[in-house]
Every structure is written in structure tokens, then in C-alpha cells.
Length: 441
Image (tube, rainbow, N blue to C red; front, side, top):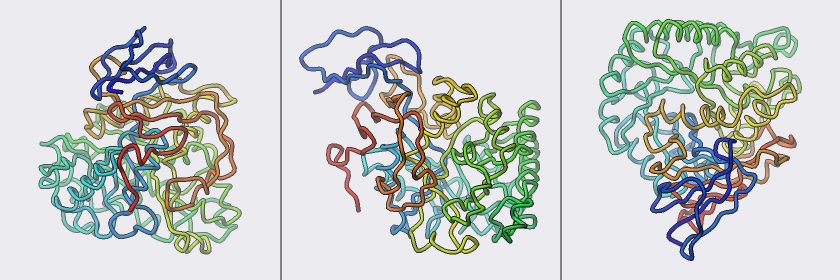
């Protein structure tokens, strides 16, 4: 069929309408008559959102294809409702040159499942000593606009200032992994508290994040450039970001699904699946993160999808790798804690579209994503069953890794289908690999 009709979806959770798709774009919205050459998708009772956009994923290729590849990560993304993801630069070798960025970009396009946009490193080899090829990456075919040394903090204030100044002319943004290594070293793995002391785990205090956030928003004000704070985890960081926005500083921020839903008490069992950087925080921080996402202080949800091979994760807690899977469960977690919460909704579905599609696409300068569901827009669409109850099984996943913190949990809300430029890339939790022509490597 050359045309597709999505019949009766509730647009952003509002009234039901039909969406007619032709040549990769929405061409009509409302009550659309059927015709013999139109394929019909019954979306009765489903919510239609602009295709989800993830600002923060780790796809591990090149270097750690045993944990994930761009192909398997794209499958996970499509199954999770994403039409675009930003692949972090901390691969082996890192994405710190134009050639490396174009390689990631091309591998992403070859999946046909999701647009993979590379994130460029801020510094060469992520070493924090010398700026990477920021302008060359920006001018490459990949058109890199987001730069991050994620996994490492750009601790040198002078270097951070230079990076902010350098990306300003082409509309770039520096994404900071806020962790002062003098306050939380590489071995820090548990929120600093009575619990970390009792467990004998190296503490990761909130001030190690908050002090870098405060410094960087002041540098953004000084340079007039954009800074984005990755995986915000503390109420103190929220306070700084809220103040900075009130001053007109160009700062944006993201929060992960796991920091919205999980607390540091889970670490008490020493299960390495709950080891993540920054660490899980206390309930009071979780409450403030939810409020900040709802009121717009935090702009976006980003998964920080971090797959790891079993031999890297299945260790004693202090020796295990940091990170959790997130692409296939993100929408359900946000639905569960922000829309369907027993304490009352903090977001409606229009709010979910704002934090999981519209704002992330704007921050990343992805013009074909996060667009309103109106005639003329690219047909990047996610269909959600808001009432579905999903019990997570870590063994049922497109990812090559199994470090899933949601295993065994039942969540409310599920992605039913993902459409990338009008073509269905995933249905009922499974990427449509053969239909799209993509292949696992």
C-alpha cells in the first residue's frame, strides 16, 4: 500500500482522529475516508504521540559489540517507541573525529529502524585535556550538534568555557556528565549516606553533581552558549537549574526513567544491576525530580541506555560496570510513575510528548522529529496503549545485554507500534527487521 491510515487514535491523549500518511508525511488529519489503496491501522483506544527521541544512549559500537551493536540498539529503540536516538561518544575508539561520527551515522541509517545521531566527544580520547574536532564533526555528513564526554566529567573549567564558546556559532550544545572527581571518584558507586556507610560502599555525594552543575550554568551565562545537564539525580541540582532558568541562562536538563522511579534502598542487596552513574538517590530526591519534570525545570527524559555483557556486570558490586538498559521500557516507566501514579498524574500525554519527543528533538536540533501531528509533518509516530499492563522479562529483549533493572516489575502503559517516516518499524514490542531490510550483525 502506498498510503497508510491510522484510524481513531487519540492525538496526544485528546479526541480521536484519523491520520493519513503518504510518502513519509502526514497529509490529512481528522475524519478520513478509506480507499482501496490505503492500508488501515486500527488505533481505537490508542494514544498517538510524535515519535520518541532519546538524547542519551550507549550503543557500544565500535569496540564492545559483545554488549550491543548499533543494529541491536536500533531494534531496541524502535521496539520502545523511538524514532531517533543520540549515540554517546564513549565507544572504543571514541567518536572524536568527523570520520568516526560519519561511521556511526551511516551504520544507524543502514538499520532503517531509527535515526541514529552521533554525539561527538568534547575532548580528544575523552581525556579532558584538548578539545576534539568539534567544528569538523559539525560540518560532517553527520551534522553533529551535541557533544559530550559522558562517562567522564569535563572538570577543567577553562576547557569547558572554550568548548561552550566553540560550539556557539553553529548552534551546538555541550552535554555535561556532572561529577567532580575530587568529591566522587571513579570508585564511588552508592549515594553517600548512612546506607553507603553500613554497606561499606564508596559514597557518591550529591554535591559532586551539584557543584559542577552550578559552575557550568555560570559558564553558560558568561559565554552566552548552551549547556545541557545529563542524568540529573538530586534535588540540589534541580534547585540550581531552576534558578539558572529564572535568570535566562540557556540551560536544559534530562532525567532518566530509573532516577524517576528507583531509590538507593535497592542497593542494599548488592545486586549489580542497580549500580549506575550517577547512583540511585533517596526518595526525597526522586520526588523532586518528578516535580521538576512536571513543571518544566527538567526538559526531557533520556534513558542513558547502558548495555553490558554479563562478564562485565556479574561481579561484586564495587567491581561491576555502571549502567542499566532503558530503551524498551522507558515509555512504560514514565507512564507508570508520571501518568498513572497512584498519587495522581503529574503529566498528561501531551506532557509525555513534550518531555520524550518535542523537547529532546529541539535540544538536539533534529528538525524532522518532535513535530506536531498535523498535515505536513513527517510521519514519525508512536502509538501507545495507555491501559496496558506489562510485566518486564529481561530475556525478551532486542538488546544483546540483560542488565535490566525492571525485570519482574509490572508497569502501566505500553508501546504498540512505531512509525518512522510512515513505515512501521516496530509492532507490539518487536522491531520489524525483515520488513525494513535491516539486519543484525
